[in-house]
Length: 177
Length: 196
Image (cartoon, rainbow over all chains, first blue to last red; front, top):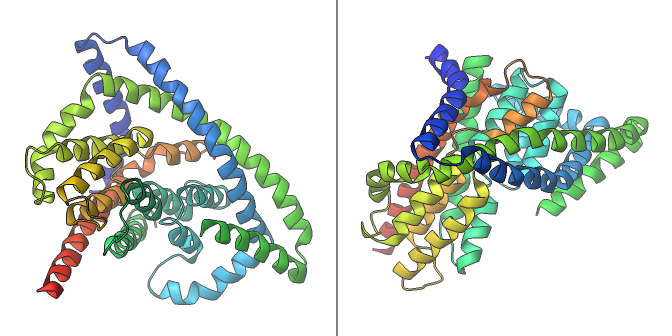
């Protein structure tokens, strides 16, 4: 099972690219032209991410270098250790449903501090990649069509996030812990 | 809300440093981390350009549409209130497949179209319908096949295997999505129960 999952991780992207190439040649598409055209959007995306990342990573660095974050983590660690939840990723877990760019900043900071292949770095990567920003999605979609009574949408969305986060902790601990 | 969180992080850090004597470290961290963030954003260009380029080909080649056709029967089961031939289902499918491939910019307008169609089905009421909430849950649990940005960050920090997390991430996403759908059903039945 574990071997199979890591095999998927390595094979998935190259195989997917191969499928795209084959589909493009069957349809006789100008693949390279399309690639270049789509790629231009990537530059825009990265540049527009820049101010978000500078703002968030700087604020988190202030919190960490002052010693406040470690003090906070030390304070809550005993309670979280009890259920096997690593205290270092708690701030990320809390912010993930609220702001995508803030979470991206935190993930980066955790990866930079603990290393991308460490347990914390791996867990942060999985948490960042496996769910979307509930509050953002809710605001955009319901805002766009003028929904005022959202009923149980927020509770259900946040509960699903909680389960995804717990699943991430459990599976990463099992596979990489 | 995010504005307050941001202010609190910076303010608490600076005030804490006044007492812990780490002001010098804070001073250094401000400029180091700003520079680090810029390097990161620039570094992300490589993977974003490559991936969005690939996705443009996939879109033109009809891979997204093909997948949408495969998932149609499943989706109509998840949305029992939407008639099988209603355009809302088409938009939902295209939105979800675009999300699966990390095409956030393409997914959002499709999602809004889907929501508009569902609003029509709900007599243009300003109350969220059952289908709307189900659709929202599917979007927030973020069914993504390949977490491009995370892979990019891992590359930047010299991971021995940047894509190592793809399999687990996919597994966690699936668990989250299934859990989300179950939670959605539970909340729905609870709300109808209360009414009757």
